[in-house]
Length: 375
Ligand SMILES: [Zn+2]
Ligand SMILES: [Zn+2]
Image (cartoon, rainbow, N blue to C red; front, side):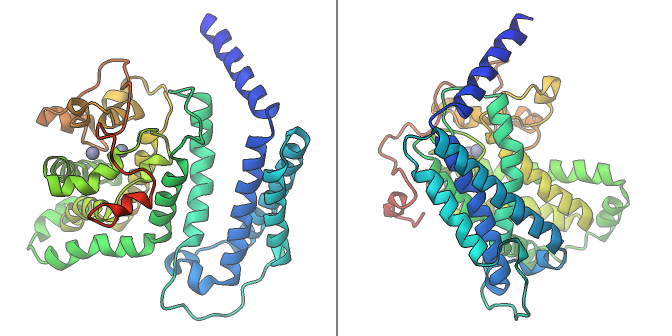
């Protein structure tokens, strides 16, 4: 009862802060929805350069038009709210200006003309859908179950993390091809037909768990190598430079780190002959679990926290203290760390500080580019 009351009071304060604040959050929300709508309209205008051919064939165009309409409505509503509350109207005006631009360019009535696929395209469509879906899941989680209550969504490094998130999503069609390449090039003819038949005969759910296990095992070894090999650490240290761990920050990864880690995880899935359906579901699970693991949220997982990697488990991997950031390499199953002596999960404790001990590590996306390797 006491817990419930204090939780209720806390939420009341949070909601009051959000609603009766200074109009900053509503201003950001207005800009957020207007940017999504404007981005979607621009995707309709230049599908040959800004959309992903593989996804496009399945798109429910009418639903997307309704989503643009909804985005514009929300953008204007939050802009008005921000104007009502704000001492500075800047955010509201930016949100409205972006929304008006989206409407002038066609708004929710936009049509797609005929087009030829461009030689080079980026996945702006994927970025918009991904950000929308992830924000709907993870912003409420961080708001309702915050671990570090004082950690603002707009902490000093959120722009850096956003650049990494944008880069990873916009180039997804190229990284997806690149990570499959080593598996197809070097491991296509290993004469494993019998094993492949055995795997593909397994029921879907058994295949899925097996896929998670073998991919995590391979990921474990390459992840550990990224930590112990000084040259590889230069790439992976980018991920460990996160001081404010949250759902966006998990995207802070060097491209080399992404390509090598994913390639390693996908090789066994390819070699052992898991079905395409299992592979696609696995790709969704790995993406969702990666974001969940970084979320700044104390989600009540109960005993499942000993079975699956959770935020508490992975936050220890981001601990500033070296003895704990060299633990918890697994991304799906903690027992893999137990197996190799790198497990660390003190019952209800979380790390005090996160990031790197090296204070001179360059901060910000562009400043990191001054390092010997282009970050
Ligand atoms: Zn690591
Ligand atoms: Zn991480």
